Amino acid sequence: SHFHDPIGFTTSLNNSINLGQWTGVTCAHRHQKVAKLDLRKYQSLRGFLSPYVGNLSFLRHINIADNSFHGEIPREIGNLFSLETLMITDNSFSGLMPTNLSRCSNLIAFHANNNKLAGEIPEEIGCLFKLQKLSIRRNLLT
Image (cartoon, rainbow, N blue to C red):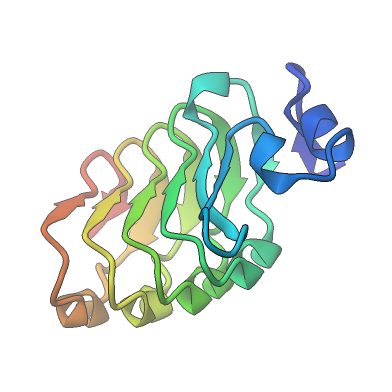
């Protein structure tokens, strides 16, 4: 299995038809699309972040900090044009920072401290004109 969920987060996903009732998921009132994914409080989720997260086109906030996600940040994160905050601090993400993160043109805050991200910081990050907070310390970046 690619995902370990000892506290039953995914159980709430399977037992509810209304997305807004899913634990850690907030939907926009107008169109009932997922706008916020906040899984920080679980602190025991582990596995890969699914590339399907890129299909959540109305997603504005992701907070999966303080868990045990690993592997690369999926390139598909660049499909989230409405994304404003991306909080992945205190996980074990590795590999390069995706250059297409620059496609998240509404990104205001990106926190990725305490991971295993490596390589150079992509210069494309400089194209994120709304970015106010970038926190990437304690990685293997050059």
